[in-house]
Length: 195
Length: 194
Image 1 (tube, chains in turn purple, green):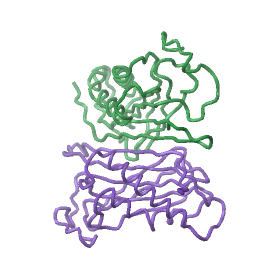
Image 2 (cartoon, chains in turn orange, cyan; image 1 turned 180 degrees about the vertical axis):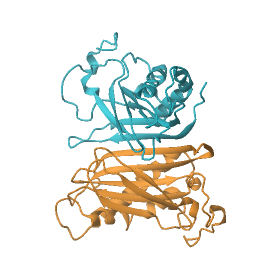
Image 3 (tube, chains in turn red, orange; image 1 turned 90 degrees about the vertical axis):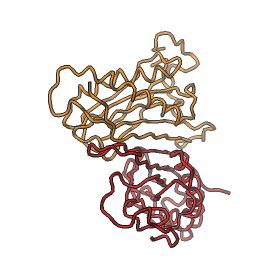
Image 4 (cartoon, helix red, strand yellow; image 1 turned 135 degrees about the vertical axis):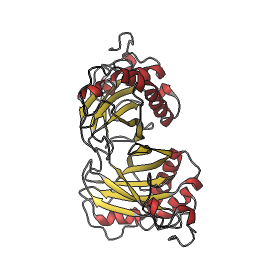
């Protein structure tokens, strides 16, 4: 039985239409879906973190699907992704690692179709309202330089001490006005996850 | 007539299932729409600023429609609302006040039985500034269960010559409301207050 206890979910779509007076056409869009969940291991040291790994699998599907739905595109039209977690003060950084790393990626990749690249991630401990920066990278070829990016998310009342905030970001584009060279999305092979 | 130049838009929906009490069958949803626009009056004192009100109306209506869409497309689910503005550092608080009319009228244009005044907040702030937008019932401002607020902001806005304008809609009372006062079922709905 699922041990996932969600207090709230925030889903955000940010659309940039101009930058430095230049129109961005088509606009670039990033979505984030953030769940605030109970930390079953808050305030104690627990050796076996499998419960959190399974929660990660559930959240990978739930939050990944919410991002894609919020963007209103086909899964195949998504371009980059990222994930992050912030544990409340009674939790351990390792709790964030257990949610993010073992099992969250596979269902997220299903939500965005393919996803050969590593899902970039970050984690921290923080109190309510603390900002969480979610790194972003191209979903099929990590070296695509135009898609190196990040999205800040925060929820003013989370995470409480016994909670964990888990964020998934999905975009349908890279940075606005990219011009620092490197591998371009159009030239990516997308088989080894790197190029 | 100043043209509205939008740098970015943001739509967010919070679904609240509980806050330590019983898990609700219907989560409370709070939706926010934000637009970050160029402030045509930044850096100078301009006496007549009224034209921006009409210029912002089409954008405000689009924001309202995006909120309703984010809440599933049915305007009748909306029970609470609020609005607010953060003016970048080269602007004036008065510029934020221009948002009252387009923000309020556009929400009322799409919501039935919305006689209550739209509560609002505004301030001058730097990039990343947060604004707590007050929320009240759309038809009777005294409905205590619907007094709420939603914090809004974007990490990279407003720049000094920009203005961040926001609209908020909620779908119900606070998740564990039990502080008494006028209840929704007792609303007369005539004066916007009770």
